[in-house]
Image (cartoon, rainbow, N blue to C red; front, top):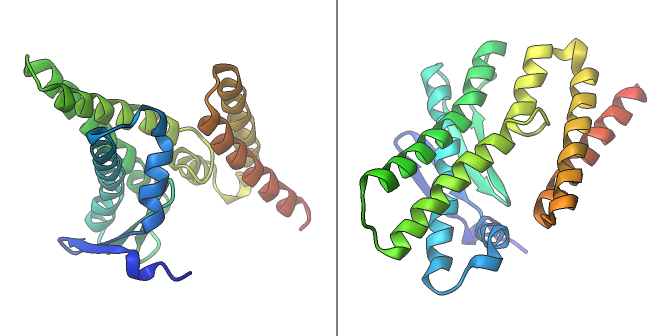
Length: 210
């Protein structure tokens, strides 16, 4: 099935942005149990803004380093593609700019909740969701597990010669998160990090076969 006709396309300055239709479905799956009525639309707005701001952090850092960038929001996240490869440490800075932008958005939501004494219930709920999503997702994304941002930083810091070490660390950390997800009944967290652990185990096997 060709879903390209259902994609949302726009630009933010010089940065082209594509939003795949599956992006919205994955957003609903993340928080389906607590959604009803207008909260469905508000949560999708929180999801969209949070992921877009994260990717804009990557993209703006890429522009600052003299390259172009494009953004695609897909199932369970997004990706920012630089027009050319960046140097090792610029790549690290660009990678960290994404979670940094998300944390800034979370702080903005937290400050708004503190300084505005009385908010309509839906506005308060939306700001709380915005704060939680950006702090929690930012922390998760910084875990040293490729292809998360923290994993990309680890790979760049250790270098290609020590990629095997980075992948072993990734499997161990992902395994701990899976255990936490199982013990706390968080199905999505368990599945997501189980898949990340599997991906890195497969990469280790491929490296061993060469």
